[in-house]
Length: 255
Image (cartoon, rainbow, N blue to C red; front, side, top):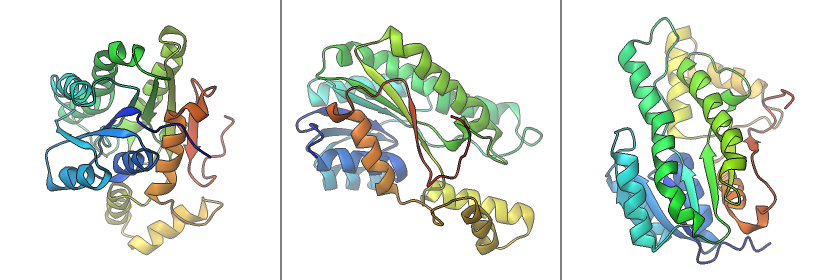
């Protein structure tokens, strides 16, 4: 199926690795022009070169970073047809272990970054072709994740933002994508932290996680990337205001 992304201009946050890189690669593979945004690194430059995109170094956790990144992406691409809101995971920990500074980092990097980049990008998106926004969330929008209270609080808030904006910004579409256990460095670090906390081996921690996944394995970033590219595309032209789970069936909540 032709997704209709050929020539579409898309800004992708957190694009130096993991899920952001996977979405950028999938969309570029469908012919989209990508502005890849992340902190300056060799990894960001490598992703941009590999997909024929433009690297936009920026720290999305700062007050000015998302605004500056969106403006530079719009200038580099000559407009904007799609936006992927993704800035990496917030600090891990329980409510008892997280201090005020950790919560401030979580709020700035997850919630405020999303608000700032969307606000800045909206005028260009309104002028775009079949414009769409995709917010990378987490399975925590459906079920709290142990030792990740920041995500449990903030990701559902972004789901609320999606539902709030769906009527306000139409015909710009806005959707979310909720990954489960995808084999990224972020998930591997969570498994390591759980192993250290519980005294179990990494293999035991992963076995417990796998027992909850009907498909019996962690997902690959490319599997989420393809779904993300679809949601950004004209092929998903009547998908709006929803959160699509990519978790192998792990979360059983309704809905």
